[in-house]
Figure 1 (cartoon, one colour):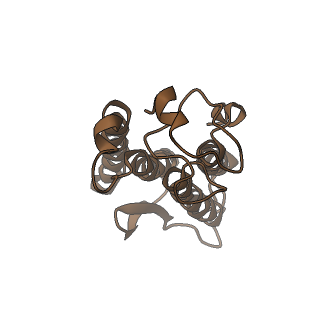
Figure 2 (cartoon, rainbow, N blue to C red):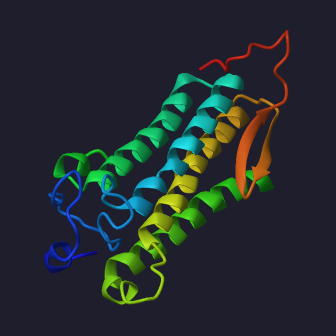
Length: 195
């Protein structure tokens, strides 16, 4: 995490000097006059994309609205974090079966890997800034936490379908991202699970 001294050595962009209590290791306004922390801002797009995908699948498969809200929460987290990193303003700092085991494992693993990147960025910023290429640890944290927060509702949907005795399977889409497929939804079966 950057200190006040590090802040004063970075340029001031469109939004003015940072007012948030946290300023991450990425140099401010290094890549854009309009985005304070470029990589930390755009890496939040994964939260939004996975949240949209999860919401689409949740609606398509007929899950209850509570699951839709979880995916909306994933998107809101991404937007809020992007607003914080894009401006570094205090106001935005406040927004912020075997296959089933694989989803749970991905949820936990992504969280731990993301946390490791966060720790590196937080505690070793002074070393990271001296490297020829900044590995953008906090941006990687966003990516892994986006994957993690997406898999939380997926796991809960699986558990809910098991409770309702629905035939459900988890489908691997790409790069370790899973989704739920409810197989016994037909004309004689209600699309939406009953509470």
